Structures are given as structure tokens and as C-alpha cells.
Length: 315
Image (cartoon, rainbow, N blue to C red):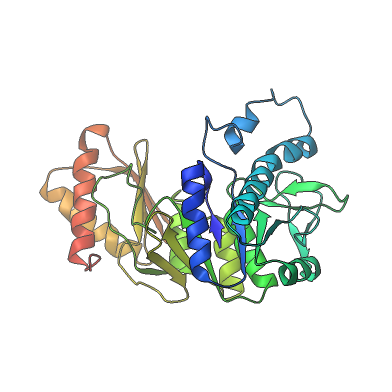
């Protein structure tokens, strides 16, 4: 299971995470993100502010890895203090072996020897997320936001077909709450549909994580750490909604669909009824992009939601 930065940001939240782990009542492997967001001393963004970019990518990777390493050691302490035998793995013990492409390490092979050995000796292993070992035996990062990727990599090493991603959201929505206040939660969604959401810049799960999970048939459960309730199940089972999701970046509306021509036809008919016009339409690879003026963007959002409702998106 993987816990995001917000889940680990404070001692109070760390105790919530402890209780989640405790309820599993079995040996667990926990992947940790850096604690908190910008402004928290050990968050990735805060660590980046310590330099003026006058260091090598290799040095930067060593710096950024500190956030996840500190987080994993802190959670090891929380567990041990509460009588659960835990151990935080070092980057060399993780078994994630990469090339030397610092800041974007490409995984070459996985070695589960040390992680299996440590799991025999402990009830819980804490693994710092988004890092591996380079060919030079140095710390290397897998790319920003890739603690999710670490979770499925380690799941593969342990021959698991289900992993848990604990976040500060209930699951996968059809759009980001910042785009529109009315949004719905998917109870399940396919890898392919998640990849499309990723391509319209709605990145609730990292691209590498989804691709690896799909290739290795690993099911992902997204849960809110505050409720520990199943939010969204990501697997091969397709939802098959006409509009999978949408996003708005500046004046550009991005819609993900496996039937973009139908979406375009319905949308333009609705726009015409309301005497609204769009421009610079592009349809490619199951994505429909267009631009509209800021004065009509709220109406465009409402029309998209109406189309989704009519096609039984809402359960």
C-alpha cells in the first residue's frame, strides 16, 4: 500500500495511517511519499527550493530522495512505538534497479531478494517512494509523482495482484474538483480509461503506475486515508461511459472519449441551441480538444455535464 504526502504530513495523520496498517492484521509493505506539500520542510517542492538549480541531476536526485526517506523512517518509528515491528528499507534494499537517467530513472530489472528477507524479519516494511538504484549504485528518482509507480513495482516483486493507493481524495472523478464543483466518483474504471484521463492532464494516478499495472494485470484500489473506504477500483473492467472525463486548461477544453465524433455531434447541437460557438477543434487518439471564450466557459461545462448525465454517467 502507498500513502501520499498529505496522509503523512502531521503526527495526527501518521497515527491515522498507523491504524489503517494495523487493521490489515498481516505482514504489510508500505510505500511512503514525502511528508506534506509545499511549505512542509521535507516535501519535494520545499526541498527543491533549497537550491538554485546549480547542481547536477545526480545531486538533485539525492536531495529529493531525502523527503521519501525521512518519511519512511518516521513511519517506521511510529509503528515500532506502537508495538508493530517495522523497518525502513534503504534505496539499495528496495530492489528497484534503474539505468543512469537521473531524475527519470528507467527501471531495468527488479530484485526481490532483500525485500523478502527483511519481510521475514519484520511485520511491516516501509519503502521510500519514487526512488531506485542506478547502475552507479547511486540513488536515482523515477520521476515526480511516481511513488504510485513504486507501489506497483513492489507489488510485482511480491507477486501481488492488488495494491492500495491511499490519497486525500475519495477516488477517481470525471474531472478535477477545481474545474467544476459538481463532480462524480467512479466506483470502477479501466486502465485504458485512466490512461485517457492522464492524457487530458488529470493525473490522480501516475502514468507509469497505470501502464505497469495494466501490463502486469495488477488491480489498484484508491482509498481516502481519512475514511479507509474503497473509492475507485482500477482494473481491466471498462466503465464504457460516452465521456470518460474532461478538463479545462486556460481556454482549452479537453474531453476523453472512445467515441469523440459522437461527443462532438451532441455537443455542437447543444451549443447551437444556446447560440454558443467554439473554435480550433481537434480530434485525435480518443481525445477531443477545442477552445472557447472565457465568457461562455461556465455554460460549456454545464452542457458537458448534461451530456454525461443523459448517457447515464451518474449511478
